[in-house]
Length: 124
Image 1 (cartoon, rainbow, N blue to C red):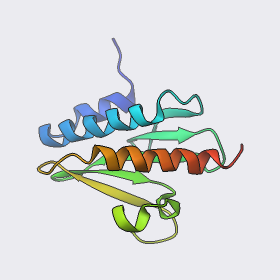
Image 2: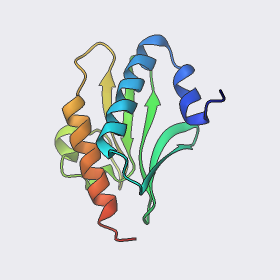
Image 3: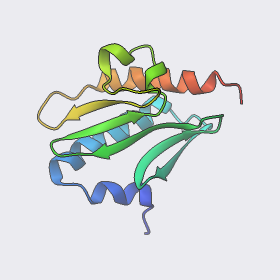
């Protein structure tokens, strides 16, 4: 069976980061719950979720040293941006999910739900 570039990305991570990245992936998948307007893709060599509407890049996963970043392309616009997300600038924000800390499943579900709503509000 041939795996996609999306799935192969996880195989290339160190063990701790792979475990966390797969948990983030599974939580995002659960949060989008088969939404037909959102697809999995690879953007800039990273697993990403893309909404069919305008400005469709929604979020992506990026492994780092000791943590995994869940990046939201329109993160600055999310309601929880200031309290949960890191970053500066006009748009991108990220959540660091540390390998040696408790997994923030509820925070991820809430952020992804907000991102889906934000992208869906485009109406296109």
